[in-house]
Length: 198
Image (cartoon, rainbow, N blue to C red; front, side, top):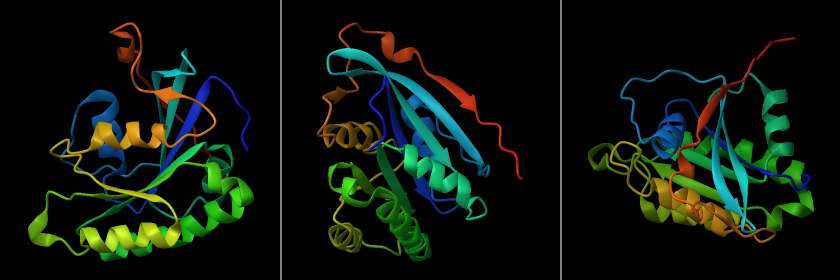
């Protein structure tokens, strides 16, 4: 299990174009970007309450490609919680999560039972092009033994709820998005990770 610290690390995985960055940006900045810009890896920090103290929610938005397996494993080994995102409009994007889930299970081993994991069907507002039903998403989450939610970064449906629910699933710490003093949640900054291919 990763060491307890003032950082609570949430890692977001999913195929390219499913809306990982859009979900994270909608949550931390309240903005939505229509255009698709591929991500290598970005980290966002947000101040939250943890065991009645202030700590940092660190959200790592990973690449949608499988070109960086070492980065993927490092993110998994350091992660305290995981959000696995697929697009409701793409069955393929759900299938692409299965190998990532296998790596998480292999890396975390016995600790996985106490680690919050959420399977997320994003773009649930696009009903006309939907390929994965809510029932199918729920069934996949049940097979994996993780929790499930549908979101829309575009309409802001269930975005804050997703992160709050993920924090509620943490058994080792009492974590909340709410802080005693209002206004402290604005302390969000983005850290551009320097990625170098060896």
